[in-house]
Structure formats: C-alpha cells, structure tokens
Image (cartoon, rainbow, N blue to C red; front, top):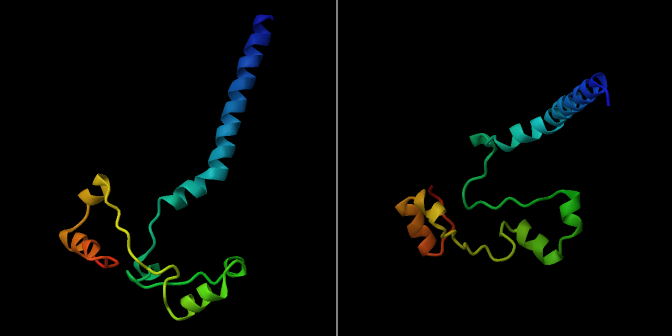
Length: 110
C-alpha cells in the first residue's frame, strides 16, 4: 500500500466515524434529551390517585375484571404498596414517608 493509499484509508475511516456520530446524535439526541426531563406539575397525577391507561392497545389485552376495577377508580391488583428499602432509596426519604411506608400506606409525601 502506498503512502497516498494509507492516507486515503485513514481519511475514509475518520470520515465514516464522524458521519456515524452525526447520524447517531441526530437520531438519538432527542431521545436522550427527553429522558432527562421531568414532567411539569400540571402534568403530574396526585400521589395515590390512580389513572388508568385507556389506549386501544392496552385495552385489547385487559380482562373485564381489571376494566371494572379501573372504572371504579381502583388500582388493579390490589394497590398494596411495597416500599423500596434499598440503602440508596432510603437515604433520600423523609421520616414522614418512611412512617407511611411502614404503615403499609401509599406514600403521599417525599
């Protein structure tokens, strides 16, 4: 391979890497930016309030029992809260929240 061919190969590889990076950033950039955002307060649901998924895809696989629970405002499956007791989670938890979890309640405080 001549020196010119080596340079052309290196330039071709570098160009391919740059083009791949630009394409990847273009396609995946909006997804990554979306993942880091938090919902606005107006878009959130109150703690403990169940909001059922009424999309056609979700509804097609749902039993009549589950639909009846959702329609009556119940969380399908019982709604028993199982707290996250990992050290990382517990380190950021308030005493009020821990008390609610220990009482078997769905927490309503941070």
